[in-house]
Length: 337
Image (tube, rainbow, N blue to C red; front, side):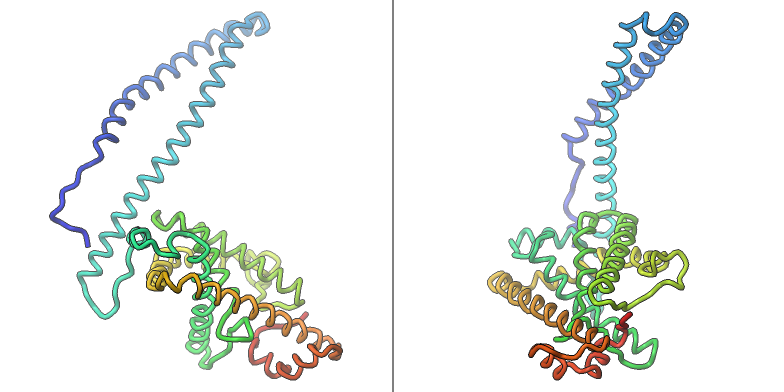
């Protein structure tokens, strides 16, 4: 909560520096305009006789071009940095006000904290998974693998009236697509967590579309199968992505970095530092082994579907433990081409 008894004022150094250069910058702008206009008039007069006869004027103008290019680069950089700072300040204030308002309402569910508050708590606690690091990203990936399966199964139950498996691995309720999506959105949108929602939308639009396209391409290239096809949708690209779902990715980008990520970060923050890193590596090994085993089983299923009999001991073991009936239950939407 914001302490209302405190009194803050603007950074005086910032105010002083701005006031001291503002007048000079405005004068510089006027001087540049007048100087360039004067030099252009001289050039126009000299053009009739040929510019080669006024080498000094040409050299002077080219020197001014270099100066103006350099100034333009500096001012553009200043414009970007100051605009970003202003946008972040406004966003942080709004999110702090929203958090205070939601906290005052009370209720069973606690309001999600602003990302700025999470950053502060992570740094203050010296948490092993603070920031946009490997540890934080792995836990987001792991939770995403699990949470995505649960959400889609519930969605299928609500919309179709029955449960349908949405896993992507043979051991446990995990799907790498959801995990990779969560990881990528967090990694690329992290720097926009304290910025306006428009940045999250376009970031999610681009990142999600790229991930979806690459996952579809990889699955078809390696296993010769597809799990979705947008060929009948307008504005699609090779049936792998389409405009409608890319817009959904953009909306998800906003929901993710503003609503879902803060809650996940709070959960991760509760993992004790003493066991956090060890547990991370244990789960990492499990997911790697699970992914490799799943790849082998699906590959064998594709070979079996193509009519290739089991030859090796491993093939025979896979056919016994994971027959077609089991695989069709695990991956009901997977189709071989």
